[in-house]
Image 1 (cartoon, rainbow, N blue to C red):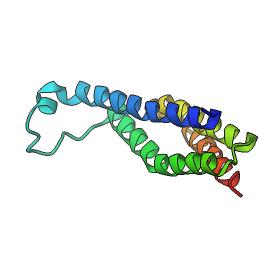
Image 2 (image 1 turned 180 degrees about the vertical axis):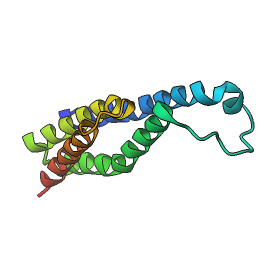
Image 3 (image 1 turned 90 degrees about the vertical axis):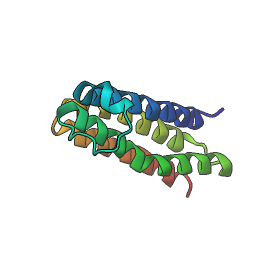
Image 4 (image 1 turned 180 degrees about the horizontal axis):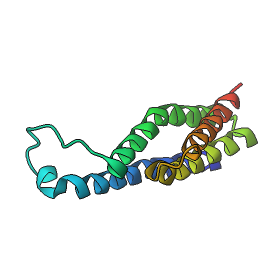
Length: 129
């Protein structure tokens, strides 16, 4: 498996980790009673770290389909050069760093880390040209 595909696999694992992190933060606020119930009512309004972890997870899920497609296209077309590899690495590590930056409201670092991830994604896409 290529390095870019390895970073794709790691990013998919990270997506699952973010589900677990967000769920854990939400359970500290709403308790397991609500989570294990029928959920017929609206969930409680999350605040603080729980709300930020939900948004961080959603943020990853917005860019994840593009990243998956870009890495798979790079692999299929044989454009797996240094640009694609570095781009995938930057995207992944920026997404890892984004979690604590968002959790603790590290301004402006959260935005700068997010932007680094976008740069990594663009690098993978540009390698297709």
